[in-house]
Image (cartoon, rainbow, N blue to C red; front, side, top):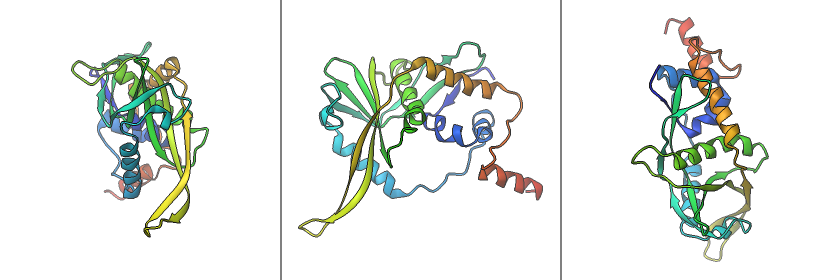
Length: 226
């Protein structure tokens, strides 16, 4: 393989952690998992959060953030080819970020919205996704959307905790809003990309994860001549 591999930021989180075999099959052989059903309510909540914060000052996301304003939402980004030291295979990032803040000091912040219970493990897990967007923004392919420098990365996590009925009879959900700062570490992310391309450089398909139902189904189908 000589052409750069296109990597999706979201696959660097869930698919990578769930099953290396499925990851390899997708990026080396074009064999993707069937699309899993995703509850529409989460997509709607995500759209509502993005619409609410569009154009608002950064302090409404978190008072500790530098002065600025939410200026971009849901834009596709694509990086230049990335040559990871020590590897012959190159890659590039292509995906769509949630939100970008323009700070008054002319730097930018990349924010991802989540509806979940905030957990410490979100930092290394979703940090890969945020670093991928950051790399694509700062090292954009020719003609692609670019912003530089990116000075902050973070998650805005909303966790519904209670419900109330308004005076007009509408139902409203109340919940906590947690800002999780993700420290930028380009060296660590480049090392992670080294693990990714190292896997994809292997000639043999890696073993399936023990709990991968997709690989289990494939094996079952093959055993029955399907």
